[in-house]
Length: 124
Image 1: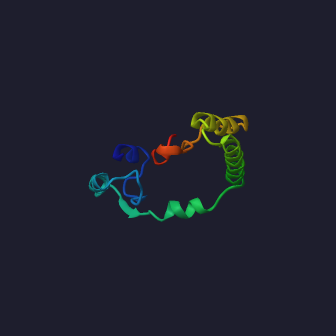
Image 2: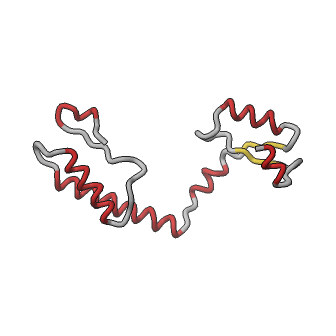
Image 3: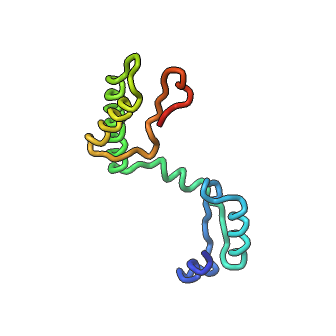
């Protein structure tokens, strides 16, 4: 990291770090601080990214609306397959099929369903 910052001509500059993040462990935060102590002034900018995430571009809003539309279609497709003795695989196939037919791809998080005696084991 220090070499990259040096190549970017940032020696002696003020740098912001997002410390409050899942991607930066306490150990690595300390290593970062120690390695850059004499290189640059570090400031905690953990509140910067969440504030920027609040503002959505028109393109982002369009993606979210399309995702919501596909989620509704998947819900209705799965609901149409629900009945006593229904196979969870058929329900999941209907849900995922609605998403794929709608022009999307596999979700970042799988659909989670559970039924019968194993309802709390949840299949996905």
